[in-house]
Image: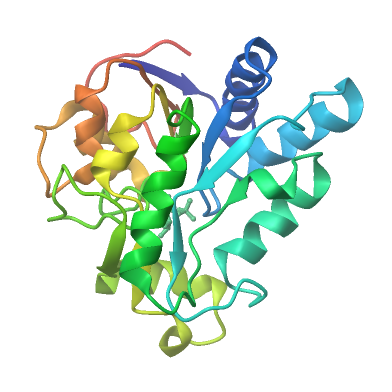
Length: 247
Ligand code: GLP
């Protein structure tokens, strides 16, 4: 695992965007796994800039998002579908036919989860998976205690995640309690992982993921088992790491 600590959020975002752009230039039909949350926003902004100013081309890229709230339609302003459209997709030339986000209103959720896994397989798997990390060490919506071999399925959100995500909703009671999420096994199948962590609020989770034991109580710690994982953080998120890492 390669850990890089940058001085602040912007530097972390630029470094991550550069890695994505490099992989994309090498493989124009890259299969890219995408995350929501505030952490990757800066990297999406930088990738949008690269598209607009440097002609970074997304036209052959296939994307798979990690998760979606159950009960929110794609056009709901707090859905991850809406988030991705507003913060990334509508600013780049990604072909909307190649975009995948779990559907929070699917009538048969179990069948939808199986279909989602099949779509990933059909395109030959994910080349590069971008990940944030929950303050409790979750990956996507794989909360502590999730099976480390899990596949796409329904998960109940923990109280902490509901609280953490309440900032995006008018009231905490509006935050959905269930989500569709790809599994830890799905994430680990990606050929490369890029995990981002920013801010003091993530320091414990980053420490547990990078230097702690591998345990389902910190799902992100599983990335220690991945053959090609890069972790990029800012100094605040790295503040509880005990070893020194390059900048
Ligand atoms: C959310 C998402 C995760 C994300 C995490 C951190 O619940 N499901 O994919 O990585 O929480 O969010 P943020 O980056 O806003 O701190």
